[in-house]
Length: 222
Image (cartoon, rainbow, N blue to C red; front, top):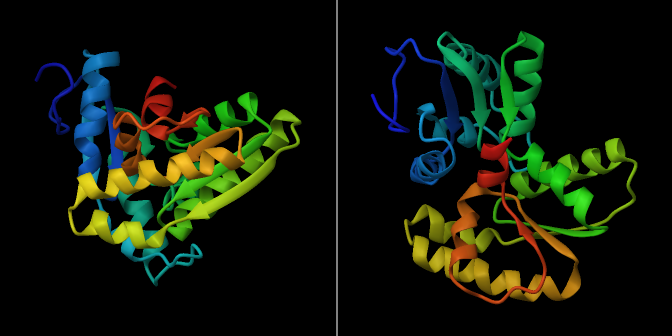
């Protein structure tokens, strides 16, 4: 096994295990690995069913906690050095479970939240799932509290765009996000993307006059 190809657990080398709720994220993080840490070994676990067991408000279907605990515990088995959750909606509960079980774990959006409050006082959170927007807003508020910063936080949710993602219309999805980014930029000093799936919209060349932070690269660098 070389570079950042998807790995199983047959290798004895340390592995970074990713917990995704969509397989669309695999290529994103493999590309980051190739660019930033080509010798790192990755394992990708895609569990869309975990996200389906959560309501927009963050409530869980019966068995969600035990199921998620089982997934995280299995992922943390040696040779895994760290488990990373790339889903903002799932992140808070996964983090709580990992802390209770003393598992090596990182929410990929936490470094992004810390960077946001260090750079701006007026921050906008954009997302297409209510649960992701809510979770990211709470995370940024917590980061501001820990940093002793006062922030003005606004949230913007576009659930209609999520249908494009679910239908596999990724080009239209990212184009629509880029359009909304340009509008929100007029009302804030910094924008945070609540979902990793939104990050490719930044590559479309749309002029956005304020910084835009997304979790994939910031989380990977952490």
